[in-house]
Every structure is written in structure tokens, then in C-alpha cells.
Length: 288
Image (cartoon, rainbow, N blue to C red; front, side):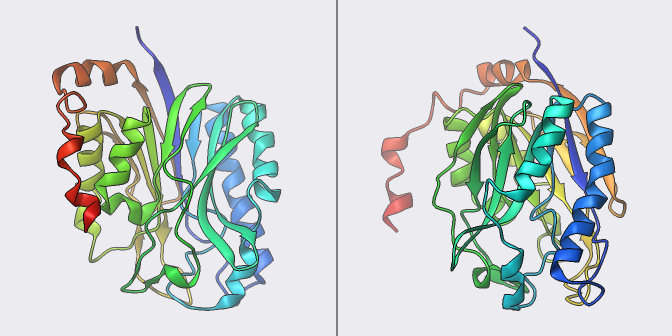
């Protein structure tokens, strides 16, 4: 039986740079810049929409300016409440990556999931936190502590993995074991060291685990950090590892694709990776 889902990804450049406005003004401008794209997605009948990593701020991690702690907020909180209006208006599930403040000194790189009626379903906190090559994230984020939840939405079972997480196959496998049919990976990644992995790792996760993935990357160069060019190239990949839709490298863009979740059963009936797993033989992975 066909279970066709229409999904969207939004990749976006920064509107106002640091120094051109206050942190609040930069965040509000970025929020407002997303609204026409969110509305376009809703009007196009998108059922599941995912935004990019910490969507309403710059990627401020190349610096170590504690002033950006002020951009963190509760989840659920003001931003999820504002976006829940659009989720309900368009009957659209929205994944909202945001800088979360649980309490003073407890800050996380988080993605909230809103169901199609605007209901807050829960959140995923980024598990793997890099501290290398300009990605000084440990200064800003605690490691996630909520495991790998899968959210039962109106249109399917959704998991989230965030940016650097994609370099670790263990969590990707757990999301599949937990029942994910679509895994979204909102990211902020620049040309250079890991760019060649962008089109390798996530198709590999999709194949190894027999699910769809939506992979999002922002675009442009963000001042004053000038870490490099965020190269966009957001894409959808199916359980066979085939990229079925891809955005540009340079432009603000809403990427939309339709796909049939029925393919998951078809692919897993051929490639019985879950049947043939040997978890009793993998203890060494967690012993080290």
C-alpha cells in the first residue's frame, strides 16, 4: 500500500551579520526571512518540513563569544509557539532546530518536532559535539542526553540527527531500530575538510538502515567569522541510497520531494540487515 509523503527542506543564508544588529534583531530577521518559505511549503502541500541547524541564528561556533548564550531559549518556548501556528495552519509537521536553554549553564543544540496540528511532540538534542577546525561547539553546547527518540507524527515516524552526528553510524542505526521511517539531519557545514563526505555518509545511513533521509545545509558566508562557504546542496535520499532531489549550492531555497514510505518494506525485504544483525557480537564497540 502506497504511503506517499511530500516533504520539504529549507536552506537559508544569514540576513543580518553580527555588528549590523543586536542578537535579538539578527534572530528576528532570520525568523522572518524563513516565513515566506514556510508559507510556500504549506501552500505547496508539504506535509513534513525541516529547517536548518540552529535555524534562527548564525552558526556562531567559529568564535567563542559568550554573548551568544543569550540566543538560547526554552524548548518548547517562544519560537516553537510561533511556528506551531504555521504547522496548524497548513497541517504540516515542522522540525525546528534551535539553541535550547534548559537552565543556566545547560545549553543544547536541539531540534523540536511539531505535529501537523501544532502540538509539540518532543525534541532531540545533538549527541556528538565537535571541537575542531573552527567548530568550537563544546563552548556552546552540552552533549545531548535524550537518546534517539522517534516521533509518531501524522504522516510517519520521524527521527532527527544533527550535523556532526552524521559521522557516527551508531545513532543512525538506533534510530532505525527505534522505528524511524524518515531521518532528518539539519546541518551547518562548509566547503573543505568534510565536503566529500556530504554525499557519502547519509546515503550510507539510508542504505544500512532502510529509511529515507532529508539532509539540510545552510548557504553563504557568515561574517565576522568567515569560517568558509556553507555550500547548501540539501537533498533527499531513499533507502536504496539514491539522491532523489537536491538543492543548489548557493541559493536560499525550499526543496520539495515526494516519496513512498512503502519502499522501506520493499527494500528491507531484500536487504535483511535487521534480521542478520549480531548484537551479541558487538560488545567491543562500547567496551572501549
